[in-house]
View 1: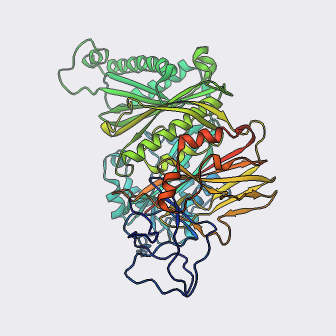
View 2: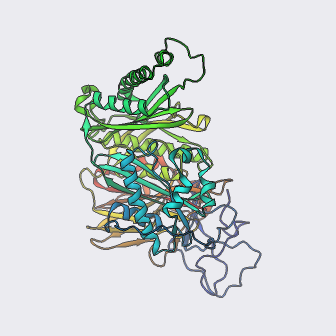
View 3: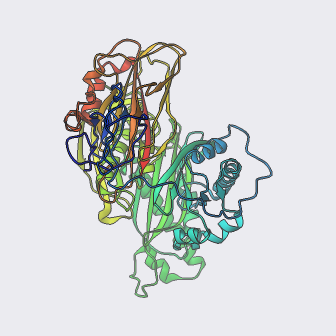
Length: 619
């Protein structure tokens, strides 16, 4: 691990940040690491004395003690790219989206951190992967593209015109098979926006990440909820309709060799997944048999039914992979993909009325949760160039945490079925650990059940109790970061507001799932007044900075700040220690995430508010 120069030896060579004119060598820095993101902390440290001898040019400069920082990889931060000539911008839409619409909010969030001069392409919402009916996906795509075009016009960002997008992506089949990144670069695009959809009771959540195609890092992330009409049908009707669409859309008739319907609430099949999977398989087989007979192909009928082997080698063997989303007490969403040789060929989905299911399968877990009950969940992550194995393990742990909280509190599950990127990892944080605290955690390895990735899949099983947050008193405190994606060593601000006076603690949850306390400092209190805004760090306290852990190949990480608010004083120091006097001291004082959560749960969570502020940081 590269380290910050504290004056005791060689360290990272980096540009001075915020150095006062005429100041000499900076004093020693305190540091708060998080294994994959070591926090160097010097909040409230004295300013350096002026008049010292200037530092020699060949000495590695130290960060000022008035900075809060995370060491980056040994290479210096890349300078902003020189804007290249932009392609013709997409024509402005005739009918703009209303101000404040989901598409406008999504576009504003994405473009907030995309640098001027970027050339952007928006990937189409493939109905086989987006979990949206084709007509809904096309409509949402147009809404988002129109909003991005209008928002980009005033920010110096070019958007590929629709004609160019069509040339790049072509038909969905061509897009699915081609080298999209090479085609985008040839079309002069250097940033691609990729959106994923997840169903909710009143519509769909669209989570979009912007990826720099040259640096292969996420440069922006935003999410918005779009309303959609939903109608639930009895499960027998829903299964029959899904099977019909899958069988009709298949390129050829063939047997079904495997069915895997994952209950997203638990990250595994579950009883409901097994029940519906058996019925879906039977219905797809029936539909295939009818189709083969209509086509006059009795050999295919025998192959589908398994009564005769396929000797031609031309009969495809399919897998059914799907997800079950418990949207609310009345509806379950079933989405299924027909797969062959690792590719999704066609997808279909439907809402199921829970009243039509057997009673033992209809009820959601938790709905309030028993304090002594243990909940279980499995989470998977796929190791790739953009998500190394250590990051995948940490991301799977946090997704499993979010799932047990959702179960215990009777909430819809996270919108992530599996973690494939740092953006997915950030999504798993959002909206769940604010509501409940997993305690008495026990993690074990599980058998991966995903359809691709092979040995690159990580699967973990978590068993934990859940302590609900704010059941008695929940202080009306709100908090936000000034953005959701940061470049290495870019200052971070935490903006807070409260409708009532509250005692606050601010903690840094690092990329390695280790935690340190940033506020309050030792022998100090942090109190926000009613109706008063508060921005951290405060004037004169320095800055908060972050960077990916300096390990080979690591370009980006996901981290979070945790705001804890209480109407009365609580022991923030018991949750995690503050920064130490040196990097080594602080490394020994940071605590593992499970220990932090247990200490948080021991501080009467029924009378507090907890706000998680996840973000990404990239080199």
